[in-house]
Image (tube, rainbow, N blue to C red; front, top):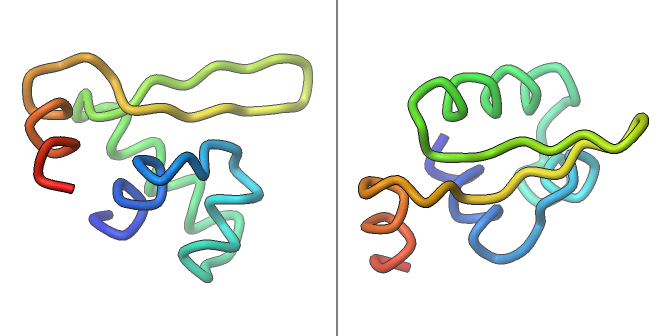
Amino acid sequence: MIQALIAIIKSNNSLGLLQKEIKASKSWTTRIIEKIHKMGFVKKHRKGKSLTIELSDSAHAVSFRDMY
């Protein structure tokens, strides 16, 4: 999960780019994104088939971003 959050901070915000950055399967990446979304770390935006992920504005997400 930490790897995924760091990759999102580095602007790898599409599912495909994130998958390549963390070297994981699409299904594993999707599950991790869903978990950190439920925890309030990320926001998801869908445009057609495209899914964009970005860090949320929650206090814990901002604190995490400030560490990196």
